[in-house]
Image (cartoon, rainbow, N blue to C red; front, top):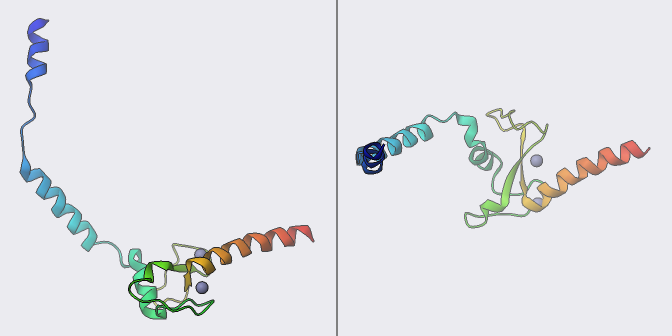
Length: 111
Ligand SMILES: [Zn+2]
Ligand SMILES: [Zn+2]
């Protein structure tokens, strides 16, 4: 029993720095082979420009993170390459757009 504990305690994991590199490589490969629609944001910004479709606010490379892509039909998996389901909205308008949808449903229910 004593012997066994001793052995377990002193068991060392072999150091394999090469493994880290292969993980890195695998990640790089993954990023390269990612399906094109996973990058729809960049695509939409390219197609529709760095401008909010609602308020017309313009963005540049420093503020572009404030511009988001809204899916017109609400389906985030519907990403036609021509950008017909995308709308570039600033974070404020995007928020507004979605709360409006909720409010719309709410008002419809009330009537
Ligand atoms: Zn806006
Ligand atoms: Zn949206």
